[in-house]
Image (tube, rainbow, N blue to C red):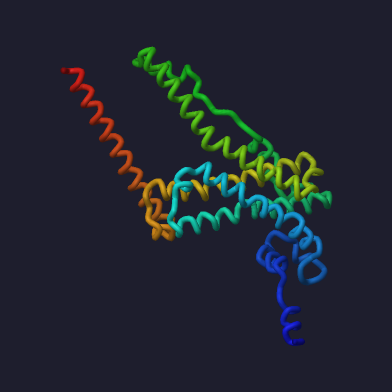
Length: 270
């Protein structure tokens, strides 16, 4: 009985294991006592755990909404890998944010730690609009008829809107979700000054970039018909195989377009 109690005392709590796994995010070298610091334990239970818990379901839904090929996937090997990545969304964001907040609370100039801060203030606007090509761009192609020029302008605008829908709107949705949950559980963030808010947006943008890269990869993986065993291909080998598949698809599209064009010419000649 007593031996069992001793074994329990020697065991690590969930918070302690988490702390050990994430030491790089904490100032553990300057802590006066060993073990899990009280402020870190409070952060874990009152911020990190509820933040991640409330994030899981909406991020899962967001991934399946933003990436249609993932939504249609049913192979267990891929789904397991995708779910694993979903579990990590928000992890670095909230921990990097805590590191910054703790430093900001000491009164230290954040520019000493983040010398790129002023540049990031310009680089991370909250929300943008589609970038349309100036219609005058098409004037240089004097061989275009008015009808063709107008068609080019409309096609260009459509592509700009599709790019916006694919990249910018998901960024807004993602940012809004993480920001709302951060405000709910990490209330200290609301007291940040202007520099703190620049860093908040920078961390948020970086987290979205990781989200987009991860799930675009799996969406593309599925779209181009890779097999489950290809999940572990080295990057170079995967890239070469992707390029090959992409070229094959483009060649097939061109073949069909040429065939359709020839058929139209034959019809017009009849």
